[in-house]
Length: 464
Ligand code: BG6
Image (cartoon, rainbow, N blue to C red; front, side, top):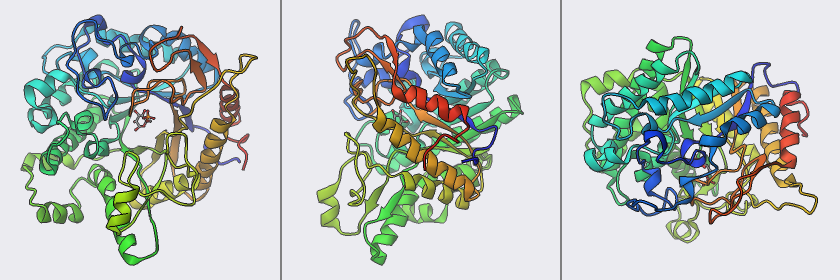
């Protein structure tokens, strides 16, 4: 399968709040993630000294990253996607001066990657923001947050300009519609008008970060990050097909603004018909005109859409509003497995935007067992990843420009939705359970050797 370009960015992806731990170390402030110990759909818990949540330690990457980077290097990673915890740099979010200890941590991390020639791919905001910004300023509901974020973005672009050449603005920016606190720092139960106003501020901030990145690091590339929530019509009834188009537009909207620099007509109609009047200034419109260099997205599953209200109500599950596809198997967590969907999505995004695409999350969350011989035979994970990568190759053959692939959680990490350790994605096993018990020892799974071979052969070892 000689399809992957020679400079294809093979690697893995993690996020600060799911790996680092050290949630109060070296001056770090509390983030929205720190007050949601049960994950992004969990309740907000105001912290008191000594409180314990699994993310407080996570997999202790903050202290153990040198050995983890060495393991990634052993697999041959060309890149590692991670995020900067905003609260390590600006603990409250609204300070003038950054926290030097926080900046120094990421210097060391990026230096460690550089030792092995691993390119950092850095998300500016992955499912967290300073909790103080939420409490004091109302999160992204407040226009002032655009300025705080721009200040943070410019600070890290300046500091890491010689170390980081790939940047992403907001992780799964469309998730704000489903998890408003995590996405835009608004309480659950906020109205659609409030959420879309906050999203507007975030879209402006994303465009301003793109502009700043281009100014400060002219040889860098900066992209957005979408949750690629591809939907199929449950039937070929025109009404189902129309509803599906509308549902896909709920997330494509973000890409449309970030790639085309203005709001699409279908959204203006939606706002009009739902009495949503956004505060959009002429300066905002001008800022939005700075568009991204590439599109990055996560891909785990697809779902179906029906116009039948009754059926809709009965079969809702998962994180998005979707009806299960009767033709697809599911993971232990009910996420439907659809490798072909990845080829469809890549083709669809390429046809729509004609911008390079970067798959920055994909993988199988599963329970792993350590065998008597100490090995972890995760053939289910190998087969999931193999089948998805074969479809990436097909898409490249279809003419789609794909920059790279970073599998989600190359080392076991805390899951975002429910803060579980038992939902494992890794090539590397971490000895820690859902209650926080375990030695944190790392151990190679069978998939570790499999992925090393895929990278070494630049995809030729994949099985069609
Ligand atoms: C994406 C997020 O939604 O999915 C990650 O960007 C997250 O942060 C991943 O971990 C998988 O979800 P979960 O809930 O299995 O961790």
